[in-house]
Image (cartoon, rainbow, N blue to C red):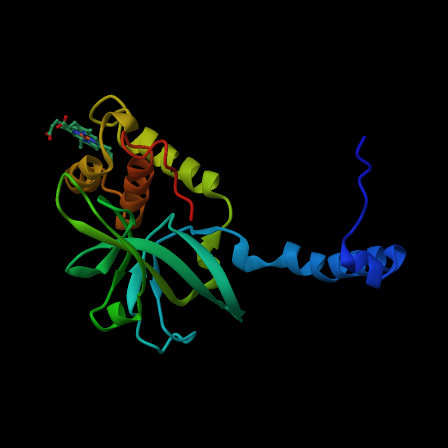
Length: 222
Ligand code: HEC
């Protein structure tokens, strides 16, 4: 029979009780850090919001970040959050980031100069369309009221609008009967028919695009 013995040299150098105390101390030391590490937690924009390179209202906005976009919080200043977000752009059209490659779900639209701030991650070419999509990260400042960690509450507000305002002229349509890109085209026509403000139309569109035939199994997260 094999007797398992500890041959680990560390146990020889440091007596075991001290070793255990050492490990416990290290764990306690880092536990509060881990649980409060905001950077690891996903948040979502609860509205369409302007993005700036500085936490200052007089700094000209460099882009628009659309509702229900996943992001991470990197830093806080009174009234402001420094956030990072990921998205995909189509080769040659670096100013528009979409939530998923090939699916025109708006995440961020940047001004011409700000596109240079994007940090590229990976690229892939779509076999069907031949288009190349690149995933990129953007970092900037937004006002601190514009995020939530509760994506369900965003979707439930969107559903209420969809179920009440998109049923005035016809029956309620089924979100996963259309693709994300089909919803984009449909809402160009149907959105204005609701008479709702642009932001509300954008919220309905986001909901439908994330619950579409080709995205329903790939919910917004980052
Ligand atoms: C003011 C009336 C009105 C409102 C409000 C309205 N629609 Fe429509 N919808 C129509 C009409 C009329 C059609 C028939 C096709 C057409 O005219 O394009 C239609 C057709 C559709 C179709 C089918 C299109 C096709 O090609 O099969 C979808 C999907 C749709 N609407 C979704 C929506 C959504 C989502 C909303 C809410 C954002 C909405 N509609 C709000 C009038 C409306």
